[in-house]
Image (tube, rainbow, N blue to C red; front, side, top):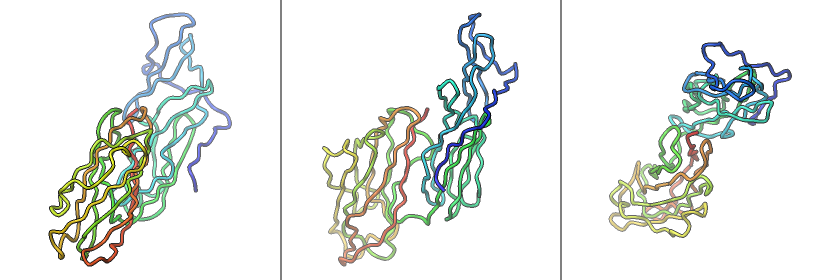
Length: 279
């Protein structure tokens, strides 16, 4: 089941109580709007000169499409309504959100989805007679991941993510990891070493790739043959948000080499993350 944006066969005008109307100060045929208060914010809907809604909601676009996350992981969904006059507006904070199975993935009143348990579910959104939904896949916790903050981030802000790896009993000797990102949404500004002492020094990287969409980082340690093992912090990667308001970009990891001190491959899985920009 893929993401769907469903048209309403007979769009109906939004019925807004008079107390919620906030009209422009000019009379006659000048444009005004209705401010609708909702779960986490408000949305302005254009009116005609008589203070009557001049357009209806045709459809809702929901994104990012079909996200994957792990239990405890999160992704911010955005809902954008299309009107019959071809204008659009963000209704994320005022729409009605609902999960198909909250035991797999729950959703809050502002579209923030949190993984609960492995499985396949869906999240739906309704507003103004229109409906949309998208699949959500929750997988077992990844052994190689980027820990990023939940929720939106502001345009122009810097997000620092921690690169972590679970090795089990195998002590890690070296790694080479390719970081994939959307260069229209973020760019890398800095890469530092991790909190694990054997990998606390900054890894090797090529700064010329920081805006290319893919950057390889690599490191090795000669401190010990028996450590480090278990839950490791390998590096910290800082991304500057350059995408427009309301956009979202995928960041994923590709393990080129994960080698133990005994030259065995360290198995890993990975769950990609989305960086979403505040509207």
